[in-house]
Amino acid sequence: MADPRGFLKVRTRREPAERPVEERIRDWMDVHAESGLQPWTREQASRCMDCGTPFCMTGCPLGNLIPEFNDLVYQGKWEDAYHRLSSTNNFPEVTGRICPALCESACVLGIHQPATMIKNDECTIIDQAWQLDYVKPMPPHRLTDMTVAVVGSGPAGLACAQQLTRAGHTVVVYERDDAIGGLMRYGIPNFKLDKRLIDRRVEQMEAEGTRFRTGVEVGKDISWDELRSRYDAVVVAIGSTVPRDMNLPGRDLDGIHFAMEYLPDATRRVYGVAPVHDITAEGKDVIVIGGGDTGSDCLGTAIRQGARSVTVLQIMPKEPTERPDDQPWPTYARLYQRTSSMEEGGEYLYNTDSVNFIGSEEEQARVTVEHAATAAGFVADEHGHVTGLKVVNVAPGEDGPFTRQPGTERVLPADLVLISVGFLHPDTTTLVEQLPVELDGRGNVARDDSYATSQDGVFACGDAGRGQSLVVWAIAEGRSCAAAVDRYLTGDTELPAPIAAS
Ligand code: FAD
Ligand code: SF4
Image (cartoon, rainbow, N blue to C red; front, side, top):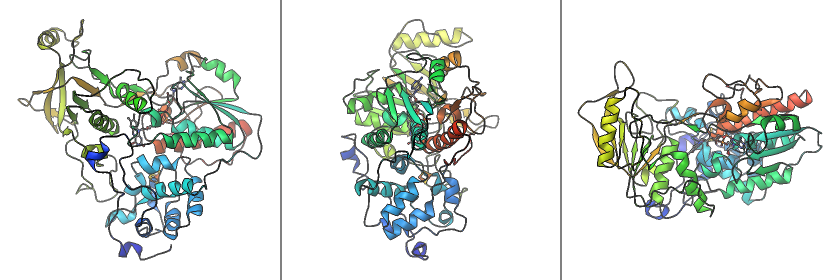
């Protein structure tokens, strides 16, 4: 620990500055003005108390060696810091940018001062490492004659593939999309995560020996059972892609889309790739239902596309704050985090629930009549375009989390509505038909503690097994799953396994 009194001398956090809102909403580049090594980086790293029991490391699913790398940042020892960091995290350039920093919520300094800057140190270390040319391909010293197919190229599949390749196995990653990266590629907008960061990693992985097959949907272009017979092991890392719908009257009006029909096209256009659904917010009144990560990304994207207005609806009771009064430590990182998109415009309506979608005047009349007439709810038999959404205030209720408040109904204008209320489970239709793995009660691929499914030699990791989650959990699962596959293939493993399957 280089400066044992650092946290007493520097009592405030210094976040990397963001570009002015007026500037950044005119492009799709990173919202930050400051990235990489800054004059204040070492001083901030000195705030780490090097606790005897570093709760931050337990907070991080990867078990990142946080006090060690904070000290090395303070000392400016970038090569050592890079080796410490990359021993636990395959893609720190991603987590260093978009992780909600579960570690910082668990930082002991956070009891009486703002938490240590862990996530930013992680980002600085890896940015320095790339700039100073420390990041090299790490091909295996010897090859086994074992082969593994990894289906899905999100952070779980990629972390698993990189670990298994480095252990000497021949690994092929299958991806149905036209580019590698999973949600990091077309789900998360470019202003949060520049796609060139993924390209750089894929190049490193190719140089190590991992092979990639894009535009191949397993289950259609090659069957799951054929894949299983061709490879010694198969890893299912297909994400959790089936969106939760809203069974409200008027749902099948035109102009109502799932967030993940909308967001990927925006990034595709940035990179000159043809859009799939061709939805844009330009000139429209946009309503985003649901204010999590995905809803916030819809907001920032719609603002950049030139929406006339953007309203985000959230049932959550109050505006996020840095730290709720009744929650001194650890803080609930995700629930109370403000996003950069929230500063860029639009309006958040809290305590607000959706009642029904409204179409043209005739459509609205039909919605009302038909909904009243059918116990099962409204079923539209012809299409109109959405013109609004009826909403109502809610308040915490005695018999349930939220109760609608009579007399507060009103209609918000909308010609584009984006549904962003979460994801149910992976799309396992062809998998279960062709290679019948068991599913858990939520529809995720069931695994035992070591990521093995009910089919011999078939493993599952990431959102496919745990449900829609976070990049850091996906990387941690991918690493652990690789260790399990390696043990299955060779009878033993030296690969790290940071977490058991949940
Ligand atoms: P995914 O990233 O979903 O990758 C699965 C891949 O499998 C996809 O590329 C898919 O095309 C492919 N695939 C599926 N079926 C097949 C098949 N049959 N054949 C071939 N390929 C197939 N997390 C954070 O930590 N921070 C954030 O800021 C954040 N923002 C988010 C924003 C949005 C809009 C969304 C939707 C999620 C966000 N997340 C965020 C969550 C995070 O992206 C996911 O938890 C993570 O990507 C899961 O990784 P994965 O590898 O399990 O799956
Ligand atoms: Fe913290 Fe996330 Fe980095 Fe882990 S991966 S150290 S939780 S920012």
